[in-house]
Structure formats: C-alpha cells, structure tokens
Length: 195
Image (tube, rainbow, N blue to C red; front, top):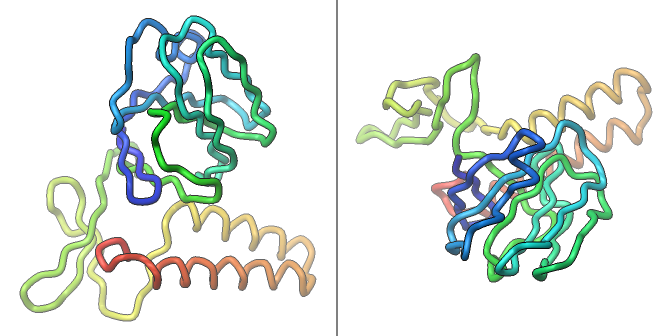
C-alpha cells in the first residue's frame, strides 16, 4: 500500500493481525527512506510500541481514524513508547522522515465496493478534467468549479453533520463551516496537481 503524507510517499507493508503487529519490523537490519510498516489496530487507543529487539531507530507516526497525523515519536532501540493520543494506526518509517502532526494521511489506493481504485486526475487536450481508475477508465467527468473532497474529509464532514442533526446549535454549524473552509484553504494552497 502506498501512503502519502505531505509531499512524501511511503511504500508500506500492512500489519492488521496481533501477530503481524508484534513482529512488525523485527528481524530487519534497516529501513529505506521511502519504506514503512503500517500497524492497523481494531480500535483507536493509547497503543504501545516496543523497540526492544530492534536493530535501528524509527519514527513512529500515530494516525487518527480520520487519517490525520496525531503524534510523531522518534523511537530509539530498546525502549517502549505509548501514544498520548488515541490512534487507530501507527506508521513506522525511517527516523529522518519529515512528518509533522496535523498532516493528512492519504492512502494511494482506496477501496470502493470491493474494487481497488487508484484515483487520479487527468486533463485532456480539450481542457476537460476526469477522475480515472487504475485502468484509465473514466469514473467522473468534471464540468468546472467543482471541489473534490477526500474520503478523509468527507468522513469528518459527515460526523460534523451528524452532530449538528442531533444538536442544532450555532457551535455545531460553525464547526461544519470551519472544516469546509479549512479544506478549501488547503486545496487552494497545494500544488496544482494535488488540488
């Protein structure tokens, strides 16, 4: 699985079972700068990561259920680390990786009704935009002035809408607007190819 954080893409192995998470990167002698191990837990929590038995340091990246970097821990060999924020997954990467709290985590492959789709944009010679799957098939034709919101942000917006439906306060309504403005500002400040 490819994971993009900031401008960096990491080729990762995924560990979803207890056995795979415990093993992690044990037994390996080094890690390349573009590689990683994604430990996926069943529930968000204050998960513990051990570096006992490791041969090299790592950067531990705690990721929320909304795919946001919550905490970054430089991890030394022989120590144990407990996340101070509830994380759903932990990305183990090279210690020199430049990852900061608050950054969005993008999974390069997304699951859509059981099919793996690598979604990307294409501008054809007539100036039309399309969203394509991994085989180059058009998934959506864009007509202009649309905003595409990532699944991560869509999930968060849905949770904010649910909160507003339950309690129609100005605060909950403002939270929806604030998050949408944040998405637009992020899109407007990114390089063209990522907008």
